[in-house]
Image (cartoon, rainbow, N blue to C red; front, side):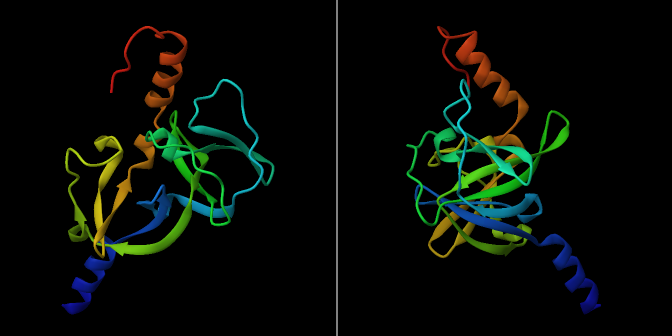
Length: 174
């Protein structure tokens, strides 16, 4: 009977990669992470939102690079020796898409059970609450668990480009 419990706990546990953005700890499911690469040449693409740093050549594929810090309203940070790009796979327009996320530093891979994840308060985070799956305690701090599919959703990308092109005089709706 102990074996069944151990197996059930293993299935319920999930691994998350934690990384830093402007001193805040964020986490994404390790299942979406393809690799972590050194921050290298990023080619700027004109007329893209400020939070899209540009594109990189990843073994012959063009991969967009997103700066989540800027997307979340933080100042753009300088690239340092610990800066890297986390290559993830997400659903975009109904298909799997590879995207790079700029991280100031990668921290660790942590195992979290459902019991370790707390609900997100309606205040106190720089990130829209619907971008978050929850919060996990790391010592005295928390890591914000990102729902990458929502953070990089088609609707959001379309509304951002639509706001800048079509609705310049109207207030943005969140």
